[in-house]
Image: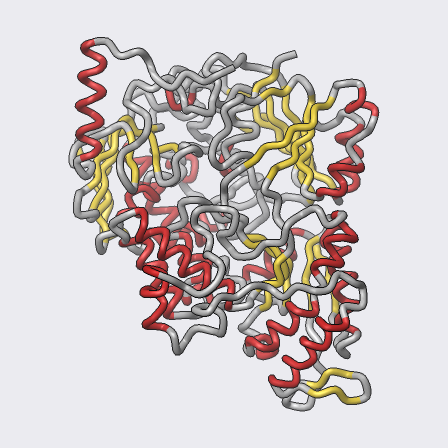
Length: 607
């Protein structure tokens, strides 16, 4: 079924929509229904639904999702504890909501309008008078201001960095909130629209930083409330029949499912068996060989389970084994290049995926933001030129990850790796790789429990390293230990994934900023501190045009990729989802494909 984009405009409606769009185009100088970083929002004020949502979708039914791991907290907004990842998105709302078909565009959710300073020094939101928490109490300006201040000072690290760039927050009249920035920042206006809004009264007498655990079941404005849970085993959310936004155009066709349940499993094999048995509603597959081989079980053949393939245009991000340059062993780029070269990707991919999945070639590959092959040109070259003495080989000339001959022995690759170690001052003594300081070279590979696929790649890699005289230690820990250790950067090499979007911005400071070298809980896992990276992020945030913005991201992509910080694995340009035949999604897919905001948000149950 096709989505309805907007109502047919009559004389009054057309004039109002045109006026609002003209106001939105004038630097957001007047209150508007949405905000875009470049240009205007694509949808008019009276749009019926987001273009990838089905406004006629029925409501009700049950959706059961599986997750590997465990959890010990229901608060995703603090550093402590481990929380079901979807809780942050399903159980909370913000002033503005994202359209996953328009990078850098937001529409009003809890806020009925937004007004941004043409000089990017402030943003002002006006609350909807009908906005309510699940207990029926109204959302107040006081709740919003408290949420912003608390998250910015006591919340997770993802909130603190941007809050440091807010000079003040104040009430404007009965329903307005204005945030003033310390310096012009076009994206910060959008970021501030995406903070979760919490109920202040629920946390009175509670230390917010210590409010992890399961003692506080959140009261929020979202369509779903937590109706049942057992720490480490499951969380169940039920759609609130009195949800305040039932008639809101932004939410029309979203949050259709009546009950959402997240079940937790010790490993991926147990989760897959539960899906085959009908205990789960859906299963995302990330392995091409398994998708071709393992999804021919009885429920598929009978038609009870449907196999869907969802294409997307989003960046690959980076998935692989991160080398921690805070450790002496990984400071030399030649050592990192040697360890990447020893990783026999072609053989591993053939063994585990029948060679069907492409390798990640850069952080923003598979998208319009990815770096181009060959030497840097045009605006990208101009941006990188002032930092040529800092950049590693390949940033300007062009860099690509080494390719093996595909054989198990990978003789040429091992020989190239050995040569790089020698250049870095390493030697072989009695079959053991020795550091320039004369000590045996070894390191720990840290993994989380549950992924047999990741473990298989490591097993093959360890055998290759042995041929170089290196015997790494492989440590497998539970999710709580993994989070504790990665938050403290207590690892040598760790399996990690950065999911990157089509609208990268201020969060890139959290990912690659120099502050993350020592500040706990950032996503700067490799410990990079680079003036060139900082400069490219600044260029992204101050770009005056889409072309300049894309050039800055492509330049950043070159610096990160040629930095050789990660041994990259593969990516899926298509998402593979097996699901109950009763589960449906709209024909019109968002640019992001199967991403946050797709399943279960715009799915529905229909027998």
